[in-house]
Structure formats: C-alpha cells, structure tokens
Image (tube, rainbow, N blue to C red; front, top):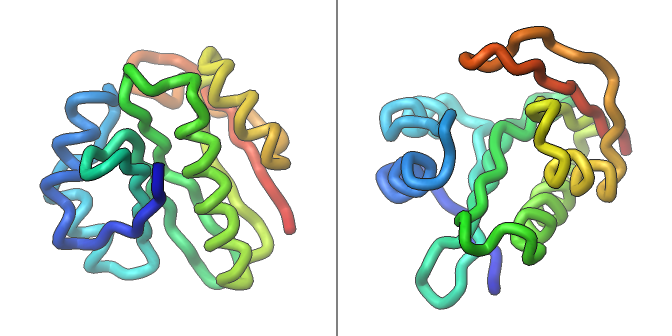
Length: 143
C-alpha cells in the first residue's frame, strides 16, 4: 500500500469512491470548489492502481480540519485508515499548524479508537449533527 496526494484533476475519482463507500460523501462539484478555494488536501491509499482509502483535510493559518476518512468496505480493519490519518497528521504538522479538529459519528467506535491512537481527544458533542440525527463527537489534536 502506498499513500499518494490527489488534486482537483482527481475530483471525479474521489467523488465516485465516496459515493460507493460513504453515506455522506462529497460530490464532484463540492470537491472541485474546495480544491479551487485553496488549502484543501486529499490523500489516497492505493494497492496497485486501486484506491482503497481517501482522507480529506483543510488547512488554515493555525488549525486544520480533517473532513473525511473513507476506506473501501472490504479493507476496513486492516490499517488503511490509520495509515491515511498518520500521513495527514504528518503533513498538517509539517505545515506548522498547531491544532487539528474533526467530527466523528458517536457510534463509529473503530474510527474513534484510531483517532485516539493518534492523540485526538474528545472536546465536545454536536447534537443531531448528521442528517440522520446522530450526534458528532468533536475531537482535537494539538501539537
């Protein structure tokens, strides 16, 4: 498995991957807009030429937001998400950012465990954050 950077030319690939593997995924138009606004990043985990995972994150002057971590259903639980998180955290830290925020569904225990492994801690709850009414845990990692 290798981790590669994606860019605006990959929006259709990213959108298709999200649609097939994630209920709240970005559309191609949303991705293109985010890339064009600047400070938006996407990384893919690949086996050969097959994308098996994607992480998206945005950088600002002093903080970053992990937007999504999506792993191919058949590859979940095999360290793909952890590899993506680790690479994103390294890139964020190298950019000089001091804080990284994310939201995660409160019932997504595997993701919460992975985030904790990388030093993220829960700082609050967003009630009924998701379209289905589920709460989101807000997590923070500080460097």
